[in-house]
Length: 609
Image (tube, rainbow, N blue to C red; front, side, top):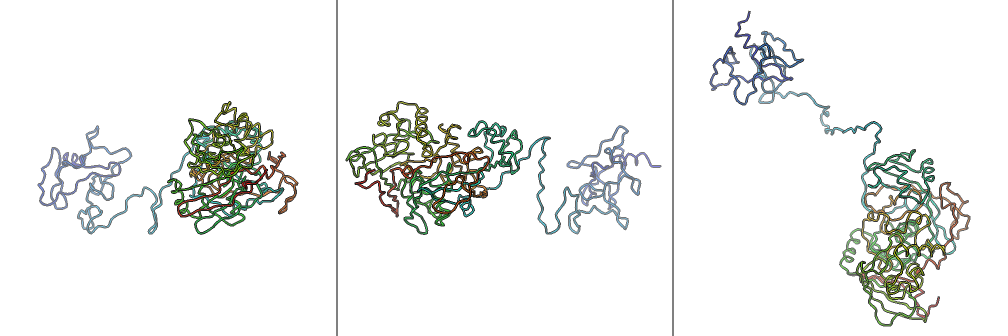
């Protein structure tokens, strides 16, 4: 039988608590030997000295339970050792009670220190093999019942350029003095807009893409042409979420442009300078992609990855400069910002322009970005243009124009204000402006009435293409002041002060991401390398939908797409004469360079229409 004192000592000894034992190391040399406490029997350490009582900074003894004994944690029953005492769980760490060694001596617990081998502890997760890098733990996303998984957005490459895969999407043919593009399949792609989050696809189509009826979108989904996160859309009631990726395949038609070739005026290791024909956009925008200067230079002249320095309006001809490298582009951009560039234009205007120099500084306000209409207004942006008459043939005058600022349609609007609009200007020399054609800023219409009158006048002449819009645009509110999410156009390119942008956001464009318009084969606006520079889209060339015979190349039998609205329509082709406006960029001069083109035929002194 054990004495009461021995029982109390055993009860007050440390016990297993959650897999760890609180045991003090033996009393070392030079330390005062503690005396026995109340009811405690002195214990001997390895040197025969008594073990100290717990003191400050040491783990306290377990508290006695209801029976006056230290009780173990539930599920941890102490097991008796060889001496009948409770033994702690094995393992390194402070507070471990020394265990008897082979010679009967008590040995300290193994652990780091001189002469001791470190022991591995418990692994919380699988450790890598020797020589392997540890792998971070993957976070598994848990979806609620019925929730739809949206993959993270892809890492996007930087820069904007068009390559061989883009140029091979389709081909040209020529007919009646026009350059035409064979219809082809094309993918419009976009990430979900912020304003679309929480709305169904059907609701987005019905409110923002009204160019086609809802039956079209249902048919497109059934045909597998609408994809959400690369999965076919089966139900248009699906609710859009952030980072959703949308793809829409359309049968794309492009308007014809003039068949006049692009002449290269100069080329070296830094720049390419061309003489742009009228009717050609500089780069993809709106309904135009292959019928653009960038694509024609790439497809027919092997000039790729060009950087736009400035731009000309689609209907403006003349000197156009491209940089071959980013460094050259930045250098010339700096000259643009510092107003170190000089530009000279020539135009033919209505009536007898004054012989003396004329300076116009009227502010200009944008009425509609989509249609591309501006007017003089005190609330507009300040600008300045200097005019000098070169010749007069009794009906019209040839005028030299020197813009000092670069506002949209600056030259054309100032000439209209002076009462001498460009002879064949499809916007600023129209009856829609009233009997005085906007002279002196006199316009007896609201902006909405003016836009409606312009559209109706061109509709009656079947020349909406000249404005760069279609009937579908009118159904979806193309005449509004909204420029089609122009905030997505990122790189600022110097505006053409002569005419600005007939393509409402005619800037450098991401080759793989066009503004997503699921109901049409074209788009308004141009999202740049903004939040989307995606991989190259696949396009498939198709034969023309009509049976016309091309002057160059061959077309197979007419193939029509069953969902394509354009294939079911017959449009009147514009004449080559309709695609020319008498406004030409004659000279472009900067620090260390100057480029000039020939005077156009219509600028000759004895020219008569």
